[in-house]
Length: 271
Image (tube, rainbow, N blue to C red; front, top):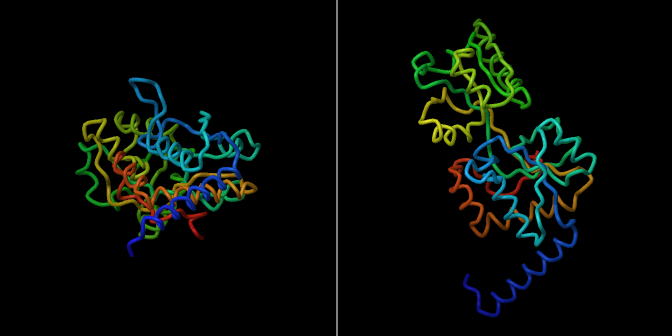
């Protein structure tokens, strides 16, 4: 249906009024916790040492929709949940997986679909014609994520139940450490977010080869304290606006994440 000029003006005014009203319900500035070591979501630009990445762009776009400033607070992954609970920050926007176990502390506004991906060095890909070849192998992944438990669950279902030796999970200090151990032949394969592997390959001259597909479907979300419903609602509304006006799609394309889009803002995975 085509709108008349008057109708379009009225619609624009109503959206503007709604945005102003939303902004009045949240503090200004919003303080967001971030750990800049997870490209392409968040990292430091080597040339400028400034924060960059999909999460950074998305956070700034969300703040602009709400008419507020966004203040980034760099911290460690281990401290982010506590920082929200103690009100040192207002939200977490740093590639955090929406897990039910975390929802006692935070409400998640989910903005992208993710999942763990097995991979190895391209020079070793002949050793892994399929995912079953991982049984009995040493697989490294960040111990601070849900990936060690995800690997163990996959191993129980696909190795142990089939009478094969389980995957040996090697906890690492992060994805970069896992890749280092892989290059040093200390582990056979590794796991990181499937959405991050193409970007890493673009930096490392396609050194890595995926093994199978992402073996768990998960959402990545913005974490907000459970008692801050106003901010959760405001961010969900702002994300839906970014999806509707095409900004979200452009940011995904910028960081080669188009295959991981969500159709709308999801609160706690709508579960």
